[in-house]
Amino acid sequence: MSPIFQFQGIYTPAVTPYTADKQPNWDALAEVIEFLIENGVHGIISGGSTGENYAQTVAERIEIARFTRDQIKGRVPLVIGTGAMLTDDSV
Image (cartoon, rainbow, N blue to C red):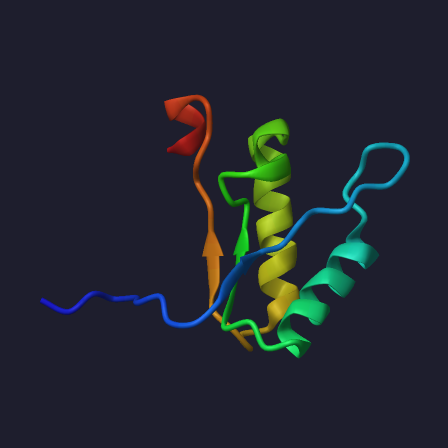
């Protein structure tokens, strides 16, 4: 059986920048994503198991993942992290 997906190359977690009022900074996140793609990453990870992901609500993680997907526009693969402190949040 062949796997559906194989990691090949460099997959980088995209950090989520925030505004002073603690909201995702969408313009800055777009810049991070563009920087990563322009500099040759092979794929991007949204909501990896390190960094700010554990401090975000499930709704925030989904919103950030959708934004990241839309910004990537299919140019590189996207991996969505599902790690969470609570099993229900992972599911």
